[in-house]
Image: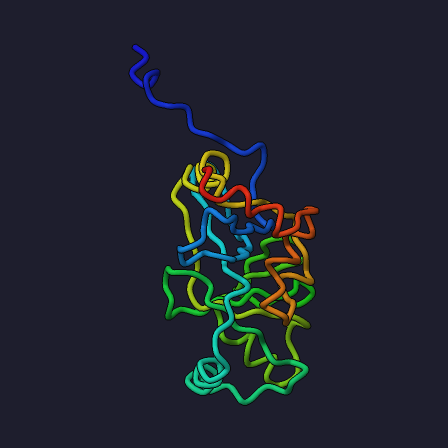
Length: 199
């Protein structure tokens, strides 16, 4: 008999957030995700969600040391890959988000515009002047168990949702990505300040 009827109904989105951007709201101030913009690579009711912070810049020395450890030649300025602290999970593991016009054997197509790869072969190709036109290397990632992201967006007002933007994902100005993402949904940061502490 209805043993599940007393459980609270799980909040759901009308559609998957795969390929969309999450923008941290003021509720996230004081957390590791303050001011973050996250590109969602996978999202489903059963599997939860996974994505990458795309605007938390790693210092140049960290990037140079990383490329040296991976034994990748110094990239030309044209092909230099962007590097972000992708999230608190698997922070020593690198993931490459790159433009979809170039495919590798182990690449996973997130959308026609973006491919996800965990292989350094992409970086080696770029170091040699080949490979994708645009790429971002994320160290670590963010993940949510089923229902958690829905709760954070719909009940806790932690995140705003924005459409995909190649300019934001692969943009070189990390400092502006949060504002650019807000502008893409017609919001100004000053419009958000009055909402802090009310969630």
